[in-house]
Image 1: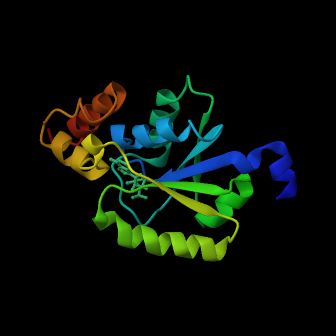
Image 2 (image 1 turned 45 degrees about the vertical axis):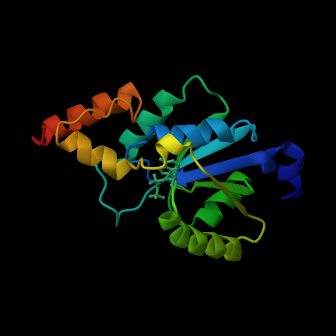
Amino acid sequence: MAEHRRSGHAKRAIYPGSFDPITNGHIDIINRGIAFFPKIIVAVLRNPRKATLFTVEERLDILREIFRKQPAVAVHAFDGLLADFAKSQGARVVIRGLRAVSDFEAEFQMALMNHELNPSLEILFMMPRARYTFLSSSIVKEVASRGGSVRALVPASVAARLREKFRRLGRS
Ligand code: ADP
C-alpha cells in the first residue's frame, strides 16, 4: 500500500456497478467525482447470476466510447469481490451513488461488508443532481422497450444501442 501511495494510486477511486446501460445519472456522478480524484475506474461487475440486457463486452464498449476523450476515466470489468478488485487496482476509495432513502439499506450493508473485507477501503456516497434521482437503468430499459424516448436520460449512443437491441429482440 505504501508503494501505491507513493505512486499516486491511492488517489484512484473505483465506481462499480452493472451499468446496464449507463445513464446520465451515472455520468453525473463520474464527472463530479473527477473533480476530486485524478483517476476513476468505472468497474463493470461480471455477474453471471444477474440477467442483463447488454453483455459485459457491450457495456465495456459503450463506456469506453463515452469516456474516450477523458483520460481520467478508465473502464474495466471485474469479477469476484469488489474489495479484492480495489486492492488489485491500488484504489482506496469506492464511489457509490445514493438516489433515495430506498438505496440506503442495501448500500449501507454492502459498505460495511466491503470495509470489513478490506479495512483500508473507504466507501464514498455521492448524491446526483435532483433531476437524476428518479433515474435508473431499469426505468430506461422499461421506457425504451416500449418505444418511448430516452434521449434526455442517456447519451445519444446509448439511446441508439437500446433502439437497436429492442428492435432485434422484436420488442419495440
Ligand atoms: P448496481 O447493479 O450496483 O446497482 P448500477 O449500475 O445500477 O449498479 O449503479 C451503479 C451505481 O450508480 C450505484 O451506486 C447506484 O446507486 C448509482 N446510480 C445508479 N443510478 C444513479 C443515478 N441516477 N444517479 C446517481 N447514482 C446512480
